[in-house]
Amino acid sequence: MLTDAPQWEREGRDWPNRAHSRFVEADRLRWHVQVAGPGAQSAPVILLLHGTGAATHSWRALLPLLSAGCRVIAPDLPGHGFTRGRPAGGMSMEAMAAAVAALLAVLGETPGTIVGHSAGAAIAARLVLDGHATPGCLIGLNAALLPFPGLASKIFPTLARMLFVNPFMPHVFAAIARQSGEPKRFLERSTGSVVDTQGADYYGRLFATAGHCAGAISMMADWDLEVLARDLPRLNVPLELVHGAGDAAIPVSAAKGAAALVPGSRVRVLPGLGHLAHEEAPDALAAIVLSGALARAG
Image 1 (cartoon, rainbow, N blue to C red):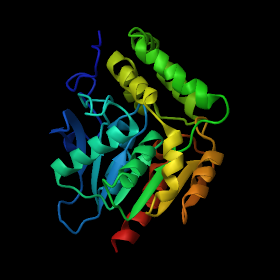
Image 2: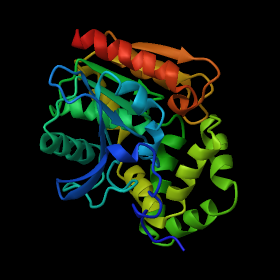
Image 3: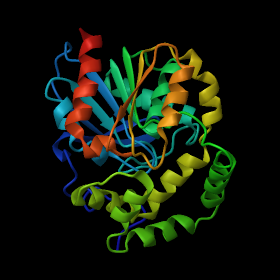
Image 4: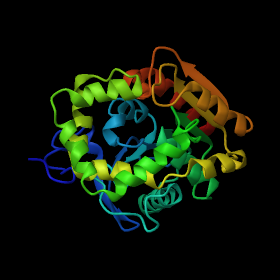
């Protein structure tokens, strides 16, 4: 039987890019972080921030492609994967950004490019807006930067808070995830992406633990995208939003709306891909990220 939180020697027994994994203490957390690529100071540094409910496995194919010429930092965010503990300010967007900044300080890394997927893009934006980082480039992959449209903007956060205060709900979600084939079906329904069997298995391992489900719910319960939307016009670094045209979670219109708030930003739409575009087409996404990272570094 799986325990409440993912265990490194069980759920992480054959974790993608496991050789690059390490555990680091910072900001009251024990972080699981993967660091790959050249150690030379001249190498561009890329920070990868995954989305809600994911972990470092989300970058399993992208990380090796990027680390061939760049130094890549990819943590499991608080409440997710194999990172343990709770940031000093809770699971709010601002607190999580500050926690990531503390991790980077302990690692001694200064990213020139920050790549955030979905909610990870919001944390990336907060890192810059709150003065924790000054990258030359910020790339949002299927970014969650604006409040959900219509009634969902009120219903979704309220539902997340209701689930958060009910201690049984993470266990219910975990039990559902243990049903054969359910993680893959859930991913396809909710993201519009077709994830390979191995990738779905990694998600399934995490979803099947109540601790990981609780971390994702806690993150959603403390999320305030209205404040982020208000602050986005102050973003003072180049912003590129890359969005799968078939995203079932966040419409392309949301990316275009966010771009309209940030002077000089641009949107690139990728046909035939969903919310997990970077897992479906890692070669294409690596080329986009590297073109931005190397251009800024050069």
